[in-house]
Length: 135
Image 1: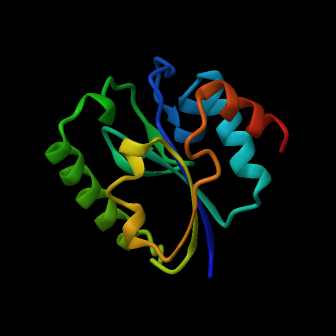
Image 2: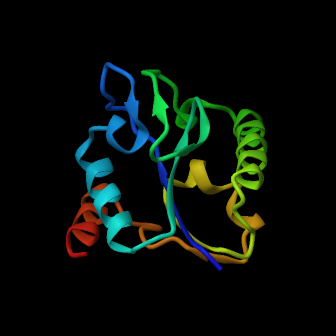
């Protein structure tokens, strides 16, 4: 069983194409990235509103999309795309998955997994930053 971490995308991004793990520049994302690495996962993926499931090393280009502005049906369609990408990436639904992602990014994905951790669930951004800084 593998350990996989999913991190949601954020609004603050670089203005040039680069590796997904370095593309997002908000303080929250940087802390989430460092926190994810401290968990020693087999793989880290980004949940991108535009691209879906993105390998952290994959080069992506600037965009301006978020699930937070999408209607429920649009988020379901996005999640179906992501689930297909998860299967294609060789991630098993019984792998240990850790979501560092908001409700709208995980709501249609988590029920497909058996071993799910959501360490930041229910915490405000400030408290999330504190928890991640302690790692």
